[in-house]
Image (cartoon, helix red, strand yellow):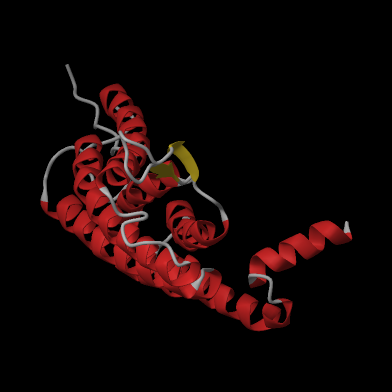
Length: 237
């Protein structure tokens, strides 16, 4: 029981239990603000996912898909949570349908908390990547009038390469600074392609599921205020 409590305490405080009170106070204020701006389930999930992913890139090792060799000079690495990173763009699309442009407030809060939960260099790199790619995603999702399932694919297809390029540059720089690796250890073409494909997998799956619900009439694909279409009035014969 004590081990479970210590694990929870370390998770909440990022292994700084002396900060428990200010962290809880800050999280309570953050959650209250999100709720005040009409954020509900998707908004809280979106908020929590960004700091979690930034934390994970500093403590969870990537695994090697292909070692350095003649075919891939620098090898290919993939982080286990790359697919989850791709889902962040989808979560953001859902949040915008609930909160409108106030989704940008949730994004800013999530990036701010990343600097507490993640290694600063990783947080900065991923924070900039999320900010630029999420704004790109927001612009596409906002100003195109395609059905929801199509907008999810389109916005993710543009945002994922932007996010990957900026993040891999930052991760590359971080490994140079921390581990003394050579430039290009993370940011090279083979790695870039694998990361983008990994991020798009989640978007494709979610888009397919949404398209099926659109076809079944469970979701109005052009309604930006919610997921359930308004009931149609009965028409007399």
